Length: 513
Image (cartoon, rainbow, N blue to C red; front, top):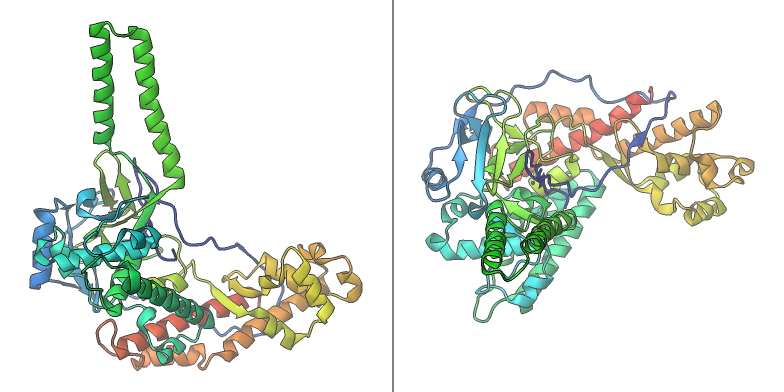
């Protein structure tokens, strides 16, 4: 299956069909501290799931031109879905009832933007070969989008390019004040690093990457293209040859066998054995390639599907048809939004690359950027103890960027805290001796420290969860506006920080507080 690229939009492909693994870094499984904490949880009781907003079918001229292109020159097969908005957010609505296992969309490879390993410069009139070879995959695909955009009506993808949003609505373009409204130091740092990386990529492109005589894009154009790529690309193992390619190879081999045998140029048995060996070598070679090399694809129309963790529908590569497809994983009623899954992604990557936070995301985490400072506030550790932790296999980094799940803290962080909180006599056994739970008193002390860490992190935020929820309920967290408008950004930041505080509140609740 294909995987949607969030951390590094990636959905997943299914079927007879090649699976595309996730690029998102794996999260360590959290270990639960099963003792009571002397803190009252701040997360409100869960509310009933809200109904999806009604679909408003898009019928503007650009959407009409895009859909006519999809049905015609692009040869995209689709049934029962139409571009729509849901409370201002674009997606795909069921234009009729859709049955489980029904094919919803199928896009031929030729109608997608695809980047294969070692692919030659796909826009030679715009960027030079040196830049192309050195650029990361998303910069290459961004250049491909800009190349198509510069072709205007001459591009075979022109109707699709024309209906892409002008603003990807992601934090990359936010001001410092807007980023601060996230109230989440970890993501702010990630976005700042992304801004530095993309600024350097643009400077390189403008300084030495353009083809002779080609005017460079503006920084805003370049960042727009890469934002579109990062929010709409799927990745998966590279399949070097399509079925038609292999059939041609088989036909060529068969013709050589028949020709050599008819002309008496070789022994028939040996010729047949050699032919089979050549064919199998090519097949096995590509199987090995698919395990180590990756391709990237943006599929028109499929790129309009929105994400929910509850969905099971994925994007699949159909080897026999050389196409990308989505099959319904359940029944959909007319007017209902049709979702797929982008894979197991936290709200960190969903916000950074797609510009939204999923309510009650089961994959969500809260990354405490500097856990050691809260531990020091609870009980300062002797310098020698900190040095011993730094010199151990865990290292001091185990208390930096600690990804906390609703179930609790990572095992490495728990081990480090047990060591730091232990008596000198107990600590003499070394860090490795604290990988498992200790005595009831020791675990109670650990739970108290963890509760202090969580409450300190919550208290450091400028607003509480209850205040944010009240602001959201009052509607003052942002009014209608475009994806990049100040009101829309305010609403996005508010919804994001609510979800983050809900994770920490759930940690306290699950600890028995």
